[in-house]
Image (tube, rainbow, N blue to C red):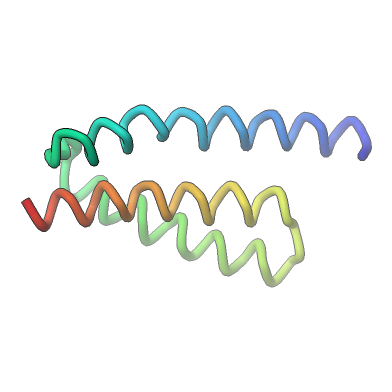
Length: 82
């Protein structure tokens, strides 16, 4: 693993990690305080970027976007369900 990959991995962990407290709180309280339009756009954008990063075979970018899409989709589900 080279220096660029390490920096990318650290960035990915920080970005994905920033969603964890919000997602855990959303699941626990069954309430998502985030704006619905924001969540919809974020899920869609992260999903497109997941597909793109798969196509270009960038696994750090793929993992980042997949996990971001998943965590924001959880928030979206709770927002729509409750």
